[in-house]
Image (cartoon, rainbow, N blue to C red; front, top):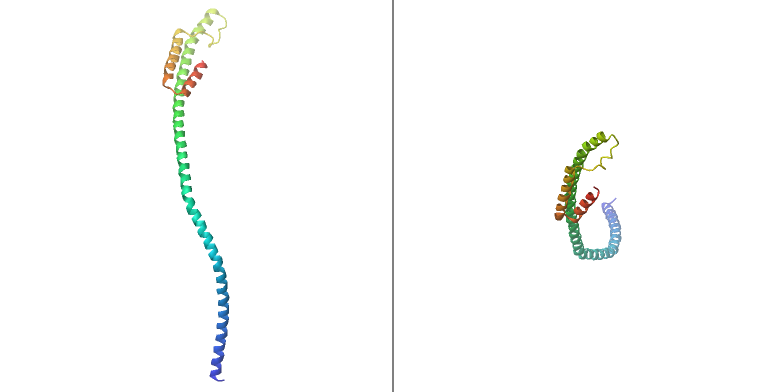
Length: 170
């Protein structure tokens, strides 16, 4: 065989491969042109969404600042109330201790007198609470009540109500 024929056959095969590749490339370019229109629509909608998001950022910032300020006010108010309640609890504990000590003092002063009455009378003694308190215990109770009344002036309304309730339980 002649080398010219071999060379012509080789060029023909390469031309057929090139034509096949060109047809395939043409189809892909056609698809790309179709997708380019779709891509342009997607880009336009993305830009619109970006503009809307950018315009809503200041509104979100303002809402966050307003919420933060309102929350800060509530936190400060809650801390103030917590401090007031802690103070009132401390004062109530102090008053309860004073009342407990006054009751203990009154009971210890009353018991010897009731025991003496039982020995002298030989009968049943009235319950310790029903027995009249000695003068010293009464004076201590009256003094405690007077000091509690004097302390009413510099207390809040809730403390005054608490003290009135404690005094009414006597």
